[in-house]
Amino acid sequence: MLLRQVSLPAGSTSGVCLLISYLLVVMLLGPKVNAEPTADELDDLFAVRGIIYEQNDGADDSGGNVYIDEDASIQEGIVLLRKRVNDSHAVQAKFTGVIVTAASWDNARLKAETISGATTDDHGRLSWDLGWLYKNSQGFSGSIHATYGTEYTYRTEGVNIAVGQVFDEGSTALGFKLTAYDDRVRNIRFDGQEFEQETRETYTTDFSLIQSINAYSHVNLSWTHTEQEGFLATSYNAVRANATFDYERVPQSRSRDTLSVRYKRALTRDSYQLGYGRYWDSWGIDSDVLEGRYYFNLYDNRLSMQTSVRYYKQSAANFYGIDFDQPQLLQTSDSDLGRFTGTSAGVLLAFYNPQRLWGFLHTYELGFNYYQRGDGLDLYWLTFGWSFR
Amino acid sequence: MKYTGVCTILCLLCISSGCTSVRFNEREQLSRSDMQFDAPALSSDLTNQIYQAREGASGVFSGGGGGGCGCY
Image 1 (cartoon, rainbow over the protein chains, first blue to last red):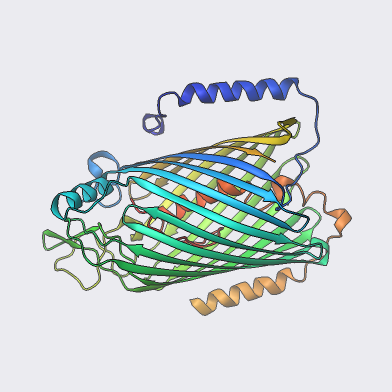
Image 2: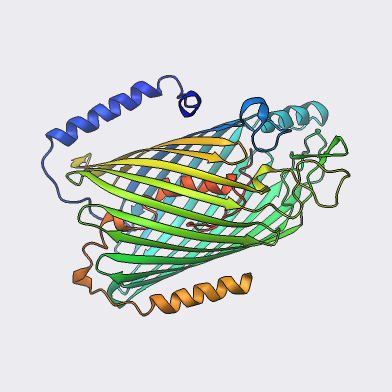
């Protein structure tokens, strides 16, 4: 089932084979090395990441929402550039480009063009993030980021402010982050009707504590609280009510909370991580997440493999339904807001080359994740990356 | 539920604050790159972004949701 679904774009297979061959040669012929040094958050860095994402809706669109074709393909690329200014300051820029091919998206886009004459040539998302980072010798750190993104029918502007303080020779680290987003939504409905532009505001606060337990293990506790106001529906989502299709309608506000705890322990060469997260919101969704990770040091501190398994379970929103007898004041059939379980597994290979290339240390990564949702929606994604610092 | 959650994290904070201090010269294992939470950062961001797009929850093991839609 899985093998049938995995199909890489033409040309990418030979590229991956070449990369693996190169890594094997360098790994086997290179000198023995110490472990990869932990990067300082302000160090110069150039990183590129790519992702290929495929979502399968099952035979006859039977997965997720049975009335909607939810097949999707996404290719995303990220470029990150960080430059240290002096001992305490650094600046950073991140650019993201995404190409989306989704049946539901394309269907709504074509209808919108045909019926309302809306300009909908944009097939993806572009965004940038500019940041300033600060860190001093007393263990204080801070950062400010500004982001801007645009995608089909959406435009978003955001700001992120974070502060952190390390205490007790590094045994305790406290962090606080505030994120605010202001979105503008072109309200083009699934039947091509276009209404007035809508707004959406999102404010998120994060509290985080990392506490050492002993010389081999530490724990991370975090609490995330989000408040959202405005147009929170997905404009082109449809709901089947009284044998016809109607618009999705959801509340104008949403309050969301998440508590997470993660434990990490170092073994002689390897390490493992266990995590649990609890989420609840004002729409009636509760969820639990269990996650385990094991990090293998495979070869001479150069080749490592991180494996992960994750189990997710969520209840449905109060106004979720597959079929409604009559149109409701609040109604959605978005499968992401329904009741389901999800099981995922992943592997991430990382290769660290201690020999400098153009004056930089470099790391390569290749990852694969597979996610199977209990309601029949399956997805997988392949990630690859290069980092120079 | 909200109060239960807040009480839970306060209890965990109290418990963890009683942990033994680990001196700077004893932190070799904790400083290893594989012992950092969310490393490597960009890969973690990408994966968390996918989970947030396909699940009703947000902010689990990551710093909350972002702007824009991400719905397809």
